[in-house]
Length: 186
Image (cartoon, rainbow, N blue to C red; front, side, top):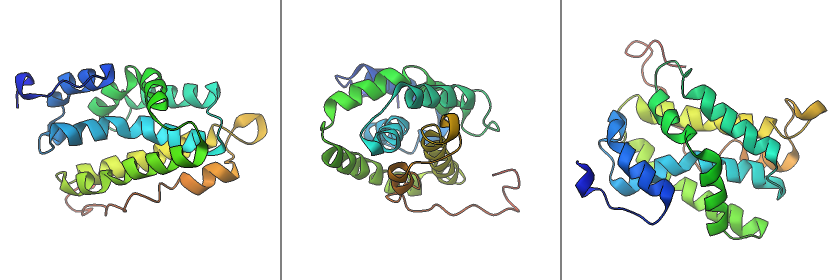
């Protein structure tokens, strides 16, 4: 696929993602729309988990940005390139998506839940071990965002609303590939 074949969407982030998606080898089997869904997964996870209490605060956004930044250079070399793309403009993409989503809590959460559920066939379509790696990464990202909100000095405790969604129940578990074939996977 070359860049001329990539549809240009109105969103600045979509254009950014479309122009950079060809660099991710694990996305070669995905359509441009599926690639965009993968790039939108982290912002949607942040909106779902941080917004579960109907209050996405600056601490949660900063923690999501910090985590994406860390994973862009320290991710056991498995999906670093993905986080390099996500890290650039994550907070702006979250703000952009919030403008597109309903303002009320329940309709917003339902819309995000539905969009994240669309990742199931995409993760299943990806070559081994990438579906598993992305699934595990999405799960741990959600957990870290949830932990950034509550507890003593906002550290390591999950509020009840975040607890309901941090396990990303809309995503079907992706089985870990063979330890014999992939001994270094988490």
